[in-house]
Image 1: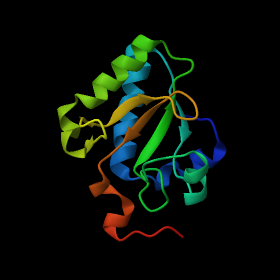
Image 2 (image 1 turned 90 degrees about the horizontal axis):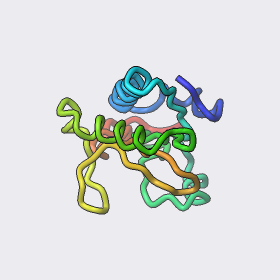
Image 3 (image 1 turned 90 degrees about the vertical axis):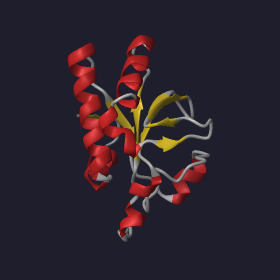
Image 4 (image 1 turned 180 degrees about the horizontal axis):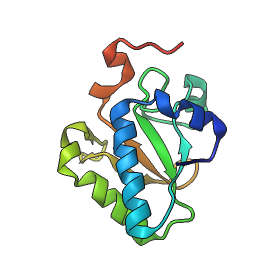
Length: 136
């Protein structure tokens, strides 16, 4: 696996295990279907970092740890669309999908934000805070 920042590499294993499993599946699919290595650009963030990035969701927060971002700048638009469709349509992960602001149940979508990326996230019922796990 590849990471843009060492901080995110170190924080990766603190993400929710279900999110890690779903990302591993997505990473494997992208590698073997399209011969591309995905790069994680963001994992866990502080409230201050969320504020600076104008995030509207707390999914990356230290209390939730249920989202990560994947670089798309080097990916063909077809590959981006295919891997998003693959993970969103996988029945095994149906119960982990979240309801987006646009009314869709999904795990991933393409988002511009501070830079174009795929946002991969699981439902808030699976956040660390719902299991009594507190950030340090």
